[in-house]
Image 1 (cartoon, helix red, strand yellow):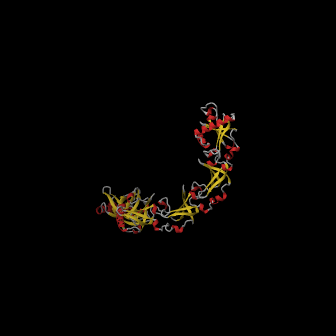
Image 2 (image 1 turned 90 degrees about the vertical axis):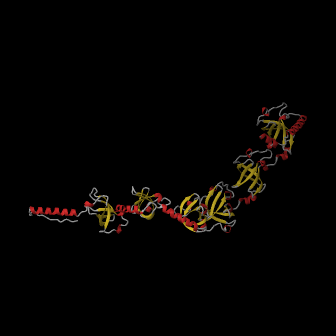
Image 3 (image 1 turned 60 degrees about the vertical axis):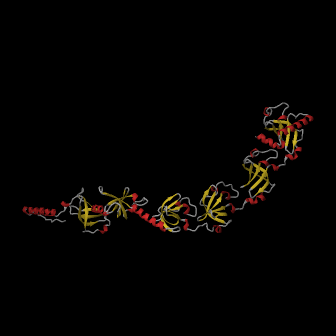
Length: 575
C-alpha cells in the first residue's frame, strides 16, 4: 500500500504548507476507512490473500497493519497454494509483541469442521484421517479436527516406533467424543481386530492340512513361535521348525519376520492351527540307511557336547551320537569335552541306525586299529609283565601295562600263604609291580594277572622248611581271642592256640603277648592239605613224649573249635 509524497521547498509560502497538511490528513482518513482493522476480532475466522509463499511459511494479507504468517506444516501440500488466492485463517491474536497478527490456517479448518464432525459423526463411526504428529502416549490424527489415537489403539501389538505412522492416512473408529472439551479419541486397533475376525473365520473355512501360507511371526516363546496368517494365528512348534537340532526358536525366526509355513493340523472349534516349517523340505531321514550304511566313514561337525557323548551333524537335519566310550580304544575319557570342541570338523564310523527314533550311533575310535586285537600277541599267558598300580578296588589292583590297557591282580592271586582281604594290605597306588599273565579276554578287554605265581607255592615243599618238633621264631602278627598268629619265614603263618601259650589258664592273650612281639614256639602240627601249621609256646622245652601229648591236645582243640584252615582264622582275626 503506497502513499503520495510531496516535496516542499523553503521558497514556498506558509499557506502552501498548511494546504499540504490538510490534504495528507484527508488522505489518511480515507485509508483508514478502507482498512479491515476494526473488523478483525480475535478468536474469529477471517479471510486473507496469499501474497508470498516461502519454503517454510506462507505470508497472508488479512487487511491489517501487518501481514500474518502461517507455518508450512499446517498445509497438507504447500505446493497446491497459489499467490493471490483467498484463504481463511483463524485470528488467534491481533498483535504480538512486535505488532504482528498471529493466525492459523489449521485452527480455522478445525473450527469450521468441528460443527460438521459433531453433526455428521458419532461414536462408533469409521472415518478417514491423517496422522499429524507424535505426542506423549500416542498420536494426533487429523479427521478435519485433531483427535487423539492412544498408542495401545494403534495396532494389535503396540508398536515400539510411532514415528513410522506420522504422515500416513488410515481409517479410524471414533470411540469417544467429548463435546465440552472438544476432544475426540479414535482407534485403529478395533478396526484391525474386526477385520482380523472376519478374515479368521474365512480362513478357518478355507484352509486345509497341507496348504502353504505366508505369515508374519507375531510372538516367540521357548516352545515355538506364533505366526499371524493375516487374521488367523497359528503355532509353529519348535519340533516342527527344523529337521535338525535347535535350542530356541529364535535361532530360525525373528519377531516381525515374514515366513512361509505349511498347515499341519486344524481345530476349527477351538480356532487353533498347527504349523510346520521343516515340512517344506524333504525329510532327511528318508532312505538314511542307503546314504549311511553300517561301517561307512562320515564327516561332520560337533554341534553339542553332553556328559555321555558328542552330537555330530553329518548333514542338515541329521545328527549322530558318538558315545563317550566310542571316542578312544585306550584313553580314559570321562567327558567328551576332553578331546572335542563345538564346531570342530571330525570323521566317524557309522555303528548303528534307528530310523524311527531318528538316531545314528557313531564312533571315532573305529578309525584306528584296536590295540586289544594285539593283546593276546603282546601279553601271552604265562608271560612276565611289569606295570604301575593305577587303581585299587575291594577285589583287586589294576596294573597299567600300556596306555589304555590294564591288567587286574585279584586279591586271591597276591599271596600263596596269606588271605588278602584288601589289596592295600600288599600294594599301594603308584607302586611298580611284577606279575604273570594268567588270562586274556580281548573281547571283554580284560587281562588277568597274578603276583603270587612269580614264585613257587611254599606249601608244595613245606617239609623242606618246617618239621614236627622244630623250634621256630617269629613275630606275633595278629592276636585273637582264641590264639596268636605268628609270622614265620617264607610268608607262612602259624597259629599258637590259647591253650598252647602257657601251663596256666589265660583269660586274655593280650595280657601275656603283645602284638609284634618276638615269639619262640615249637611246631606241633603240619597239615599240608589244609595249609595249616600249629605252634606251641609252652612246648618249646618239652620232651618228645610231652610233645606228642600236646599235638594230640591241639588236634582235639582244633576239631572242637572247627578251625578248618588258616584262611578262616585270618578272617576271624580281621573281624
